Image (cartoon, rainbow, N blue to C red; front, side, top):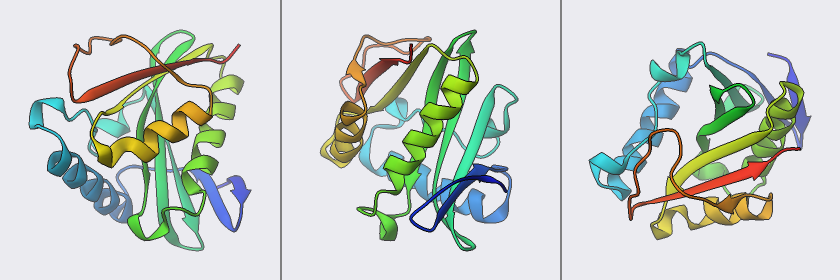
Length: 160
């Protein structure tokens, strides 16, 4: 797995079907269902993240999985950030910032002009919303088939 390295963290393309990744994503889904009503959970499981329209990365410190993120192509030039997650014990160490910077750079290199994302409106998601705002994302209306939902916040960023 070759990729971006920072602070002893290696970010690289990965396979959502790996055993440790499946377990990590199961924890992600459990958190989503614990904090949001089921019909407001838009997180993807490892099977859905294996879709050819999705590029998936993990962040590892040594062999330990400490984070992941994915980029789903919506249409030419537009993508959606999916499955941004940092391991609970590794939060506050800048891993999400490294993952987001890596994803933004990869999106630019792949010709994306605009990115979108959906995250929760609950307090649990406040750190994520702050991270995205710090990196130039602004609130926007629902996109790509999402419906207006009081449990969701929609964001976008122009990469041009």
